Length: 304
Image (cartoon, rainbow, N blue to C red; front, top):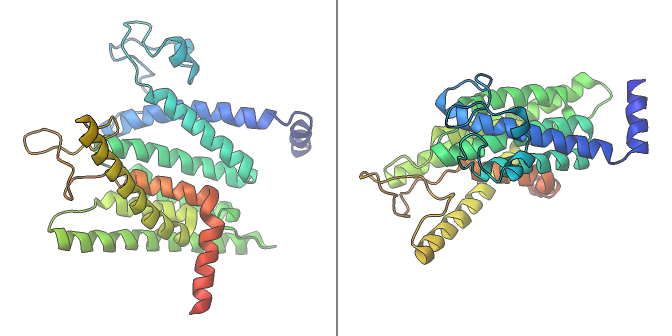
């Protein structure tokens, strides 16, 4: 009865669910802003409620995703303190990704995809700011990915008349993604450390790619590793050129500092957050490259 009613609504008002998902995504994006700010500080994401830097609580009508920032022109009502444009940007990004999930996938897979997008966005900006990826997104993400893979076998493209069989197949794909993704990054990190004689990659990246692998399988994990490396090279080259031409680091530049506390020079030894690159590559695979990458690996397996 409920499904029939929802189908009727979708038929009569085709714009209703996309609009609802977009608004829902913007609200989740507002919550992700809280997570990005508080989780690295080990603060509660529930209490206290949203408040300005001066300590004044933010009223609900000043906390409407996206709109409030523009209506207030990026300033707090209480003290006129500037709020970063990153807040509405994250809300818009989350809304856009949630809408893409809803339009492209079945409802069940779309909901799981929304969870993946939320995890990637949080890990992305926390790693940019602090060069860490908290365990809630790595260990917690891996556990969540395993559970959701078994609950929604379509996430890994599995289907079977018996749900239990499809669930076991999807669980196997998630486990392979976990171990192959983590093992690849760990091997590369150890190899680079032996060559450079210093830590080349944080262990958080090892756990993070494993967590992503539970959502996108081992093929997606391999793609994310090499795609993320390519994106990292592009970002590093762009940052280097920006600094050379403008004489200053970009707003989303490299947060590493020298021993004197000054911004580090862009060299082979600088710390470049790899988590954002892994996350972006994983989303590229999830939304568009999945069929091509899987076909490539299928053909490769056929040759051997």
